[in-house]
Image (cartoon, rainbow, N blue to C red):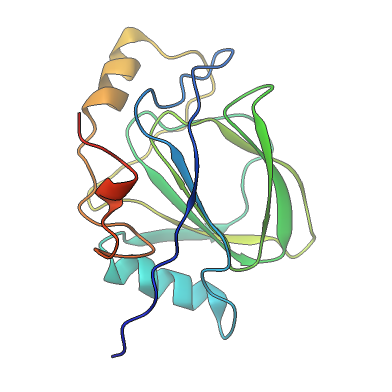
Length: 171
């Protein structure tokens, strides 16, 4: 197997916004043009699995604000394009298209604002993660859960090169 070039993600650090806690320590990572040909959904699933993030679903992104208090979430855009709101009501609008990927740290609000008819996403989580679906302000217990979540061992896109810790720092 040949070594692939690391994809350097864009980072988006979000403060708590409205009722969405976001993550106080870890930025959203936005990877552009990760996979550009072939069966992109299957290739995302393989790449995430190879890097220790078991893929768990293929679908779209909900059209309402939500976050997960007990799991980091990896989203690979397998088909189509969308405009997303990251960070909760009034957060940051971003555009994603086929081949792009997003790593959302626990607590990060997200929703689909609009999407092409063929929009398809592959979702993956660190091993053992059992994600919840939060649509209300975080309780003190939820905030503690977000802060205490185990740190992923590998970057779901790049594996160990560069290490995820280049962008996410242990506290």
